[in-house]
Length: 111
Image (cartoon, rainbow, N blue to C red; front, top):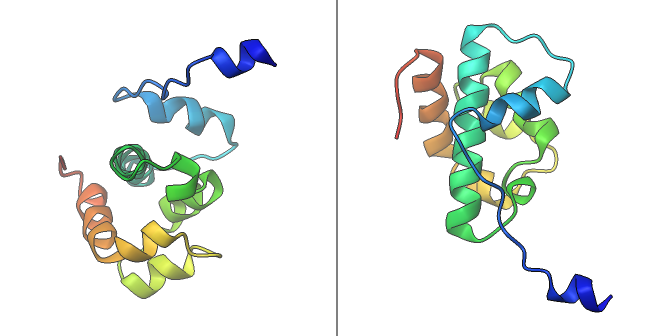
């Protein structure tokens, strides 16, 4: 117990290929557009979690990340329909996310 309390939490390391580990854990077969959306959402989720000081799963749970990547919604209503329940930060950033998803589908780089 004492040793556990003395351990320091370190946030997971993020790289451009970090999404591949999660993708390989699930039995999905995405096409190239879906994979770009998945990678983009994965990076957005990590960046948002760090800036909001929340966990990545609070920002967007893994199963919803996969579902959004599969559906690739292009409207706010469709994006919100992919999430049940709707995570608070998804509701907050829904307009931005829809635009990002459109760009990722087209293969455009987003910072």
